[in-house]
Image: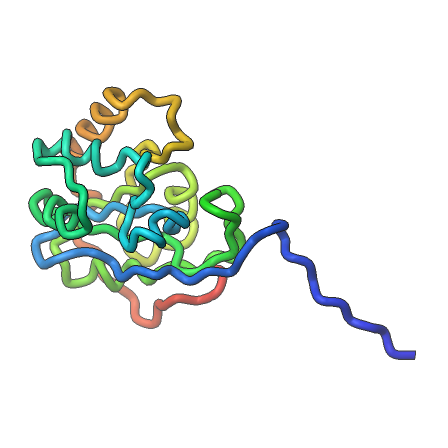
Amino acid sequence: MTQRKYPKPDPVPGAQFLTHPFEPFHDTESTRLILGTFPSPKSREFGFYYGHPRNRFWTVLSAVFGLPLPGTIEEKKALCQSAGIALWDVVGACRIVGASDQSISDPQVNPIETLIQGSKIQTVFTTGTKAYALYTKYCEMRTGFPATRLPSPSPANCAIPLETLIERYRALLLGSEPSRARPRFSAGFGRKPGN
C-alpha cells in the first residue's frame, strides 16, 4: 500500500514567500551601510526603504545630519548621498507575515559582501534586533565587518521617544570607528537558501 503524501503546512499561518523588490541604494561615496531586515508591505507599496509613514527612520536621519526632512524617494536618496549612507536589507527572500520581522522563516540573505567589496563602506549598521541577528548569523563571516545595532525606527518600537532615538542614532552613526580594516573576500558567495 502506497502512503499518501500531504503538503507540509506553512510553518507560520498566513506567511507568504516574498522576494525583495528593491536594489541596494548606494553610490561611490557611501561610507556607512544601514541594513534593515525586509521591506514592510507599506515600503513595498511606496517603492523604497522605510516607506511606512509612521516609521521614524527619515525623521531621525534628517535630525542627525542636520538635513531637511525628505518626502519623496528622490529626496530620500539625496539625503543618503549627502550623509554617505548606503541602504539595503539583510534578507533577499523569505516567508513572512505582514511586516512582522519575528515571523520570518526560510530566509535567503542578500550577498552583502558584493556591495561592500570595492566600495568605501567602513561601517555596517542594522536597524533592529532581527536584522542584527540575521546579519551576525549569515553575513558577518562573509563581509568581515561586525555590525552595530541601531534601535528600530519602526512604529512597533514606539516605546523609545523620538528624541532618545535621535540621540542614539547620532551617537552610533557619528561616533563609530570603522568596523575593521578592509576585509579580504572569498569567492563563491551568493544568495542561497538558509544562508
